Image 1 (cartoon, rainbow, N blue to C red):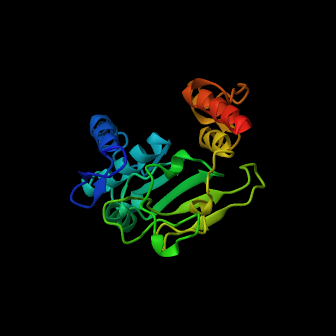
Image 2: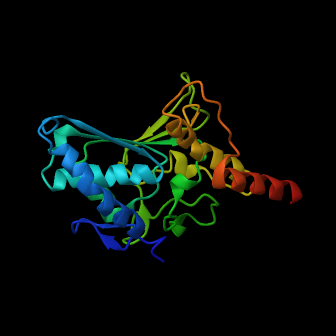
Length: 232
């Protein structure tokens, strides 16, 4: 169940996903070495990442504050497609310490809503049940979400949910991904601001690179989901 339930303590301030925690612990020493280097020790820091990298950015930012590597005013977090990194307790304590934090979500990005939260069945029989803010051990997003519901071009509209009402249902949580929209959900996870993020990074951020939405494992999964949708 470790893949779905945050079960690893993070400095006693809530539980986080075991795999995220183990990866964070493996890379944090190298990040810390850079942050405390005499050339950079007084610099403000923006932690950023996509998908798993988003969770690692959040954990590293929080870690840097908790271990006094940086103070709160020196830390900013901007993530793309970040999964639910920890539980409700972690999210609340993260928000208290990391004042400048934005989770950017594209459309119906399906992986940004994993691991699945515990649903609030007080709203049953609605199909799009919100996450239950009373859940102690279920995965839960920290703030603040910036949701682009209809594309991410320069003029695209976005909605900001600051978390005052928990993992708010006014942003991407209100989208119910179905079999027919699953393929788009995968593409929305991989493509941010017009760039296939992994491919763009592997190409050293070359703006002239052409992108293949069917590349890699997730690309093949998108193709399979589209085929299944045609059959049913």
